[in-house]
Length: 255
Image 1 (cartoon, rainbow, N blue to C red):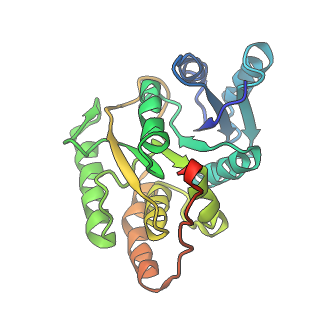
Image 2: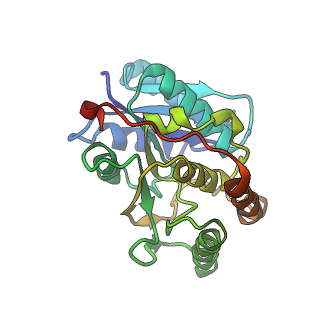
């Protein structure tokens, strides 16, 4: 089934979640979302589950890129973005496999771009307060104040700067130099938002409720978080001195 939208789901050892998340996304009736899974050599057989579903049920809606090992969240998404552009998708999503991002929120993110004219929409945990369920308080505070710190350093008018639930218009990904994106961990999320803003794209935060995973193991680490904290200083430096390619006006029927 040809769709204008592709949901990119990076995976590493997500056998407990991957089939359920695929079924939840493809079951959305109001919109047709295709799915691209990017698996970093999961030893638990995640990719085998995806291949079975591709062969048995979702031949024209589910796709898989297998990589040789854990190469980083950012590089997984960059590979997915390039694939989506080549395939001609108009709307490209980032989404976790573990149900921390509710599939039922996908149409709301799509509507912000497709119907309201935004170039990028973010499923935001913090635009209406702190909407996080089942996280330890220490992690909630760390994430919340990290976003505050990023806003202070970069000047981004975005409450949830590290959010990983995102919809892009294709034009955003075609404008950003994807090969120049430097960060691999959660700083990747900050860099993409900062770069989109520097390129002149309009961004909307859509309030969502983030639910901590029930199955599988979190991939967050102190090193990843440190990259996000210290990387923003380099982004601010770039904002002062780097020249960013600017958004081009779309034809009237595509705006």
